[in-house]
Length: 291
Image (spheres, rainbow, N blue to C red):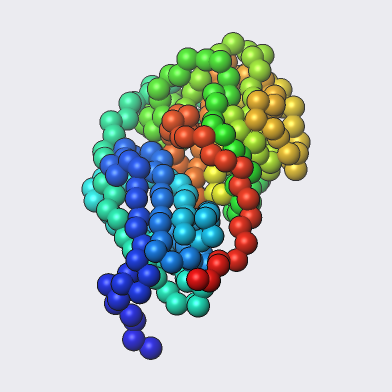
């Protein structure tokens, strides 16, 4: 079957796609808003191989969602496409341009216990188990958004502004820092910045005491180097609820909280979540209405 030209799809049921902001730095978060001239049954944001189901409102006349730009995304212009299906099952489509702006990342030179640069052979099995545990946790995100309102800092602390830093441990270059370090004293309470479900909680070789929260809708946040863990896997966590305490466990040079975030798999700056507008509680919408 021949593909229907995008222009024809847009004329069949006009869509308007708005991105805020239209230019975003590496590691940033984009708000996506879609309006339709006719009710749609569904709308999906297409970003390369990634397909993000957008939240439906106003009987299928409006849709919204968030798009994460990975901190290693290539700078430059790209096209964000939204594909939809109307009440009759016909396909519609529209697009909007997005500019990814290059960001200057720092270089961190750190001195740590040598076992965290070249782990001893007897730790290899544990490290492999750790990686598999995180892989499984990230592989099955909750589809529907749990959180509402605004995101808050998980701990009262000053940021070290080292998101995306190129890290050199004991003179050896290692992985990029896909999180934000928040300097706080050992034992300081760490709270959930928004409602979520705890999908991973335990002690791991490199991140130490760790909690992974799934906020639904493709958003997950991470908390590393904890000295205490107050939740277990499967717990439903309310915004502001204590999930642990600041520590220096794992590969850490001193007490601090490593706060990370992934949005539909993209590693984003968690500080960007703090700038998002308050969102209403998610409600599962009914079927589209017919005129």
